[in-house]
Image (tube, rainbow, N blue to C red):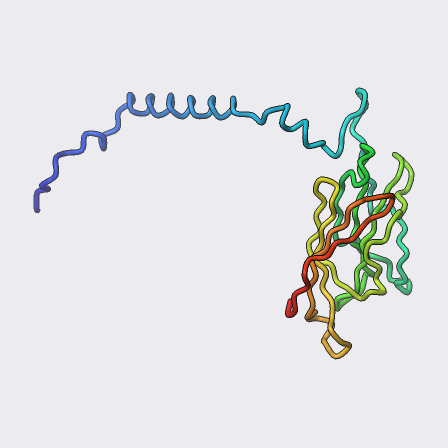
Length: 192
């Protein structure tokens, strides 16, 4: 057996004192992390979209499963594929953005994107159609942040493109301005 030319490493032999020192250091790190909280004044500048007003309970966003959509599904019913709550018009009450398509057994049915509102206990109602299923688009990820709705839309350049494989992609946003949702589009890309 060869002997090492390095000195013995004293720290490789652990003793209870080492574990106590390690535990004390970890407790100090955890305590310091607990004191590092976001500044309440800074977070007040970004409004929280689902708020409690005057001591009342938070207002729940409309449930998209209870809404009736302007879809023609031939008796198949519909599927709520995505739902995102958020205060879209700045009134302190959340709306829900719902991506809905017909409940087809196979294939990729076109989607609609709807904005829902409603009073507590009442069935939600569609107040805006952002993407109509007659546009024959599929909808990728949808997000709601700071009153802005963003989505990726997938479509087809011609009727010859198989419905499984959209060849157009468009990133869009909508924002409530002047009493309507205004759409903005990023440059479209070919070959999704």
